[in-house]
Length: 208
Ligand code: TMP
Image (cartoon, protein in one colour):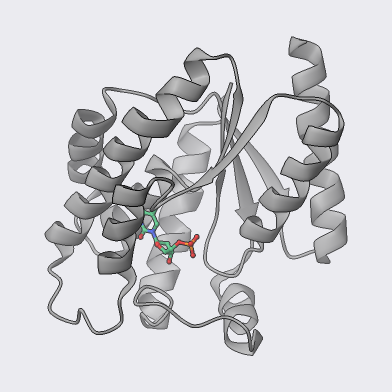
């Protein structure tokens, strides 16, 4: 079972995924927690290049290819082996982030970005994707008011970029209703965590 957590910056999904992972471990589910871009040493090195604020010359297509490259490495080294062992993989972001950020935000086109990603992933899709739905206004105000968070190259993009990312996410969700579950991420964090945990626990118990 391959489950991805998707959403705009400031949706809280990274905090939610960690908490839900710990709860599912306590329930004796065989879960693995990982994230993109990154998840393996090579993929984390690619992440550092992509998110480095000093890389102002990074071309949008190069950026899209780097995300796809890090995804490929992550699949080969970590996700595919874990799925083969029968684990439940919880992944913070995956292909839909590339479609929304590079396809929509960077105007590369969802189709183009999908094509390079299908090459990278050999058509691997998540079984379930959770979309943490929060408007770019609320998301970015959370990012900006979080003193512990150092804004990366993508966080620092302008509002228009984040609006396009959000609109593209909404379209992807609407076109993939069978795979997506929408979580209202504008609610207080503890409610979002509990809601997500209950939804996933129910799904996983049905499969046990
Ligand atoms: P994070 O904040 O969830 O760790 O993700 C890092 C940034 O990378 C975030 O702004 C979203 C962006 N991103 C893309 O633009 N494309 C992708 O394919 C992925 C996985 C992340």
